[in-house]
Length: 476
Picture 1: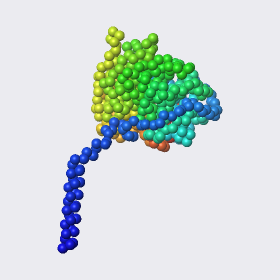
Picture 2: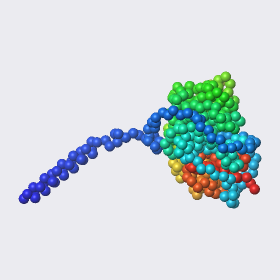
Picture 3: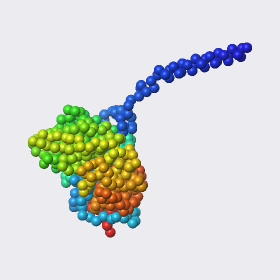
């Protein structure tokens, strides 16, 4: 009898507990403490808050040696001298690397990142990050030997965040300008590495460091460094001789720095700088007494994450694209009787036309080329083209058997050189309607080979997350 009473009590308690739990489940909101994630913000979805650092930009210098100057400008900045990612040197390049190892000129170990090189006068400039010293390091190498000539560095603490360094220096006859992961800008003498000046964009302009750190590459226009800090100034022109601001474009809409870089364009006879910020795209005067003045702006296409730079087509048309489902927009910029206007010509999803997540597409011989992002449906990761007049209808694809990741691509000797995520390079003959593979060869052994390529004097420079390689592409 006693055992029966105990069993009854246990059953009653279990029923009460079950009813209580069910009631709690029905009335409790399990997601009330959660925050909606912004597309692409796969680290935390909220602003990364880190303690401000007292960074002494360019504080340390190490000299290793010198090298002979080579003629020509080389590949002096992001996307090359004309900002179109097309090498125009008349140097015949190979179609097949019969002995790949014989074409490798040199390899260099790097800190983790995706920063690409710039080349000028036979010297290679790359902004690296030394994880042991905790420092940004502008490193200068000989193009022909890979020997390090000097490095200029400064301590700044970074936490690994899908890589560390990811920008390309801008170089001219006199200067090298860099933007580090935490928005420190440095200007040095091109030959000697002597420090000219340094600017912390966070402190001077109130710049908000982007997720995954800075992706914007600086631009040089003569003795002026063109930067897009956001915060107090949408764009700014800095005198390379003094480090002082020559002009600043107001930023009343509080647009923020993106991973996109400032491009140059001439529309309606007016030279201008284009910048695709977090908030929209704008055109800023690049010549005359109104240099630095805002000419026009558009918020019609404003993704939360922007990596590709604006692609200038013709007749005042600009192609804008971004990843994480944002898709692509084609806009028309016009000037009538002194008044600028912007019209939306196309706006479509990644599965409906050309799009890109990380790399800036290439406009070549009237067609636009890009690698479709992973959310482009059946065409994901394929190399494709569209007419520059349309922007939407695909006229060429590499096919389902030729897919690439987030890797870069470049045009040289009328051929495309395409690098996939794992360091395999495809040499292809490409027209607006046909994709023909000439050769495929592994040139890097690592992963995340996302850094932009450079081609100059018949040599190709490429990197994965931890190594830089120089490949001799000259036709034997």
